[in-house]
Image 1 (cartoon, rainbow, N blue to C red):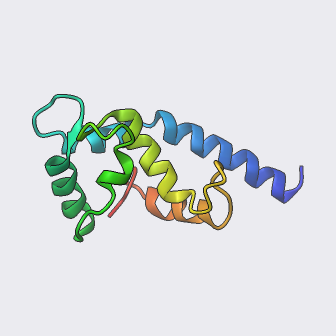
Image 2: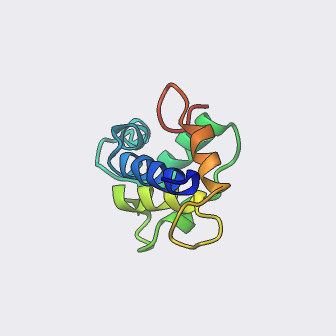
Length: 111
C-alpha cells in the first residue's frame, strides 16, 4: 500500500471516529447548560468563548434550519465543515493536519 493510500485509509478511520466520537458529543453536552439536547446561541457562545478565548461567530452559520438552536447533527456538521475549508466534502491534507493538531490527549478540541 502506498503512503498516500495509507494516509487516506487513516483519514477515513479518524473521520469515522470523529463522527461517532463521544468527545464531540461530550463538548456539546458540556456546553448545553439547560440539558435540552440543543445549544442556544448563549450556550454556544459561552462554551466557544471558554474553549477558545475569542468571540464566537459560527453559530448562525452552523444553525442550518435557523431555529435558534444547534442540534447534535448541526453541531457535528459545523465542526466537520470548519476543517473542510475547500468545501470538497472530504477533509484532505493539509486540512487533516488541523484535525490531528486539535485532537490532543484530552479528546476533541484540546485547548
